[in-house]
Amino acid sequence: MENIWVLLISFVILLEAIAILLVANEDILYEPEEKIKKIIFIIFIPIIGAIIELRKLDKFARYTVDENGNEIMTYAFWDYYITSHTNTHSFGEYNDGGSGD
Image (cartoon, rainbow, N blue to C red; front, side, top):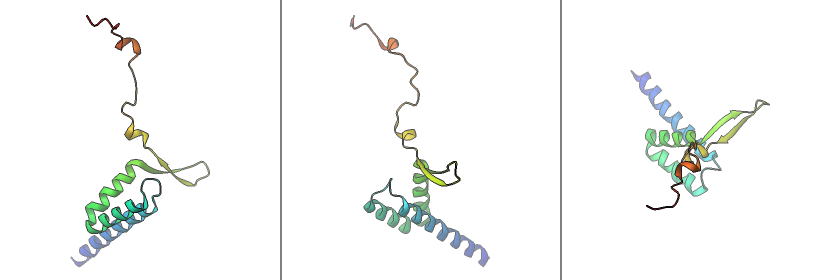
């Protein structure tokens, strides 16, 4: 039974450390003041804070491998800030002729 507690505590510490390191290393998404606030949030709300921040980072920033085998960070802001991904309407569909009758 003691081994389960040790594993659980080590998992929480590992999750916290990974979240803090990823937030601290993120230069594009967060300002320095914002990083400090997020790290404090992760520390004071242990599991939930780490999960929230890791999901936010995963939503926008992904590691990919280039043709040389190097890991590079790519950002996908456009997937979340564009209101319409496909525009299937033509201008003719919205033309009412301006008659007003």
